[in-house]
Image 1 (cartoon, rainbow, N blue to C red):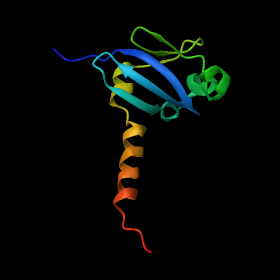
Image 2 (cartoon, rainbow, N blue to C red; image 1 turned 60 degrees about the vertical axis):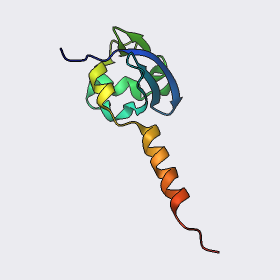
Image 3 (cartoon, rainbow, N blue to C red; image 1 turned 120 degrees about the vertical axis):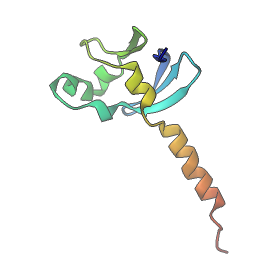
Image 4 (cartoon, rainbow, N blue to C red; image 1 turned 180 degrees about the vertical axis):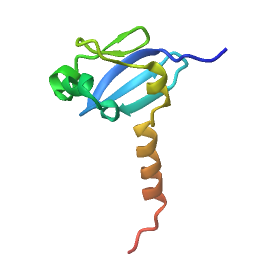
Length: 97
């Protein structure tokens, strides 16, 4: 049986970045603007509407009927991990005196 992830919690971080938690405990910071292609997503470019997301059917949805498949969210790159890797590289870089 294939795993179908379910979003169980979400909160706005900044811009179009949302922190999501899935039912298997995975947490990710995802830039949702990567899906803003086509006319159906155009209204979400308005920050006021974007921030009105909610969880419905195990995924993120908006009042205008738009949603993003939970498996797409689960497969998305985690910006938090990218940030941590960058910080690790900075810490490991020798400083000149």
